[in-house]
Image (cartoon, rainbow, N blue to C red; front, side, top):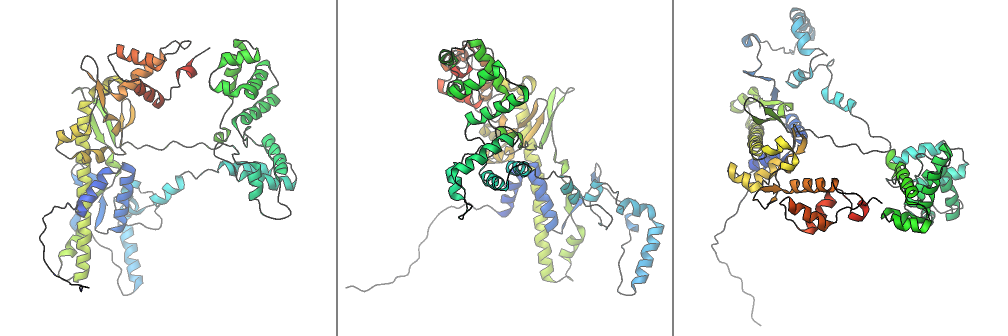
Length: 505
């Protein structure tokens, strides 16, 4: 058996690697941030980097005092503290107006953001914002539990009801079977069976509001609501028809098979249509009435306005919400002072470098975003004049080539951004869309195709709605030639039901 042999050698290999510097990474991150995220990032940097400070900028630059050479620093000596406080009282009496404006509790928030000392009497802007933020509302289960605690039932039924509420879903349904709930209950003599849970559930369905919560399926949910309306308003012919249709023909109703319903029930179509119209009072998700999801707050990163004198649209960034940043001159001096120990100087230099990078990244973000917006305003002029139907195809590669930047830069610049226009607030990415050409050679965006599809469907005869093939033919009349599956996809995106569900009998 041959022995093992170890060898040493050298090899030369030619290759290329691309590594991003931390400064480039930071610039890309800041460019991609929407305005609320950017405000939070700047606030974090101000708290962690002492070399950064804010100032209130004017047209001529930072606000300065009338006589900077006469500024006095108040320092507390190491001697008798009484002398220091006496000197403070003398300064306050001599410059009472200045002290009141600079340090009083009624100082404007913008002035506080510009820097300066924070005394005990001054309100904290962050604490004010937290106090003014709406608290999280109670959940659906919590609200129903409060109602159930007030119900006039025995203690055992109360206990079973609380057990059932643990399995409630967001729409107000009880999707978990009673057998499964009984199996999950704690072991012991008080462990319930499915029959006992059924009794408690029926009581809860009768007393809890809104009616329909804790239903096990849509049919039961709707019938519970009809019972509640009948108790409050009395029975009518339309209500009785609605109850019968839901109890016996809900599947046909959901598929708009009204002629089949008429044949099975013997009811005239007029009464069926009246019952279906009355059913609009009912809800398939009653739990949503108690807990409504609030719409997310959108803060536009730019505002687009029309300039009548120059007949063009102009974009203004809304980054005025951000504080103006600069380097603290005292730390700048300390970084060059040889009298300061090296460790401290190195620490200050690192923070100064980070501060410079942040300020440069914010400036670069502003310039890049404005350049992209100006291209959008020029390319999509017809959208701002006439609306979404006039949106033109605008690939990001085209904008990148026009600006001389990488397409990834354009993508980051529009990511998560919104702009406020005379036609509403829109995501900036909406303006970067593909499209197709009409028979006349005119380019139309996919958004314009969707708008044309909506217009055709809105104008159709509801007694004879157009099929997807007919919609393709109608679009061809407008010079738009797309496939049937594309029409079906866009119809679904617009939330428009199929031909059978759109038909009005």
